[in-house]
Image (cartoon, rainbow, N blue to C red; front, side, top):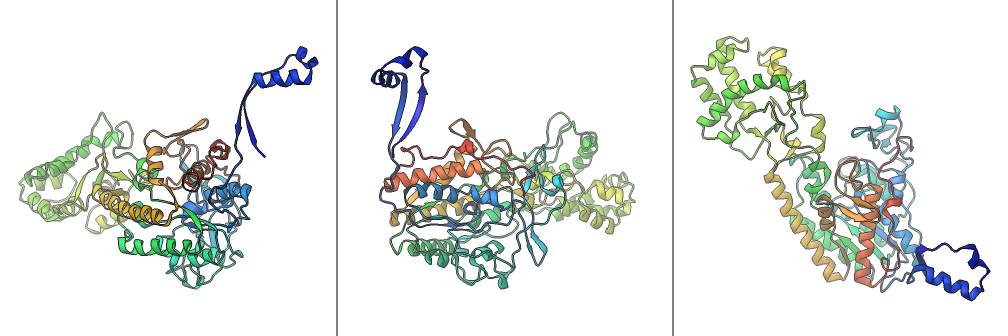
Length: 536
């Protein structure tokens, strides 16, 4: 049946009610601006049996957890509801047991509950409602098969890895979400998809092949090498299309454009902060000694200076810099004023070699951050705090607890470690890998005749001005932008709705369907940007 969208409807006066039916109809037609939309058609696509493969973005992961409401608002589930209007079958998902998020194994918690909005920013659910027990127990996975085969944490090659969903391989070589999808078997995720003889599939994989390295500040994990990614991705496409299935694939966004990397500024040290401002003269006096050394060594750009009138950058460790530890220590010891400097801390002159060595070790690769450095979202909870491990170390070297604490303030007197900062050199590595993976994805899509979603361009739009859809403009600001959830990485339900529309747009373009022209794009305003802490 044709769908009619009513743009405007004029009110009829009582006098017109007495008119003949044909006159009344004529008046209605003249008083209405109506847009008659065509019926929804599939074009060349067959949506009768839809399966979706991918990672957390496919599963509906949001607010740093997987839970029922998020899964129900996943982009594949939204697509399946539209596909159902033109012959699409049932779409089953491995639903979690509640809206708490998190998971237990043998009653012991192995994954944490979701984040919620605490008034100023993201906070753990339990900080608002008190202790909870996640209801999802890993040892009792749900019965499949499932159409949504999205597995949070999965890399490209995990989709073709036997045993990735076998609890016996956990935690070394199995994923708890994969265990729930695979039913604790050795079947690969690809095999689980093919066993359902899909007529249409979606595949969005590869984000985690760069994301794990990025979110660790380049300090943990590794970028998937190009050859491994190519083999995994081409294996997936070859097998999924072997029986004639149609499909849609998406490429990898620039992960450095997401709120996880853009929320914390490089210069968060505010002189009006009573915990920081009064310390600035003392800090500048201490670093003045070190800055003279940097200048003497021909590295004046490493100078550390805190402003008393404007926000200052944090101090970071930059592993790409030459390590000047030995040179710093040697230069300080050669200075005739250094013993007096040591005495200013209440230490005897004999402690000069010790102090020189400690300063060299701590600041050998230190500098202040620049706008090109990306501080990861969790660093906001670390900056300005005292690193107790560093305190313990300095005390073991002979410093007093008070003095050790003064030299252990994260981002101020103690450079932020590499895991809190994504350096420009690391960003360049990620950009190169992303470009290579995206070339493989687009080539595979073209060769197989699949619909293609440029997710990279979509997220860049969100990061640069936002996207207006319906009555809403979504952007990549954390919490208030509407597109990204509280973890700074995954979309909100509204963001997933936007993504679902982009998938339908790509399907229309490639297969001649008319989701857009028939008015079947979803209204993103019908999807929430956050979930109440009371939703359990």
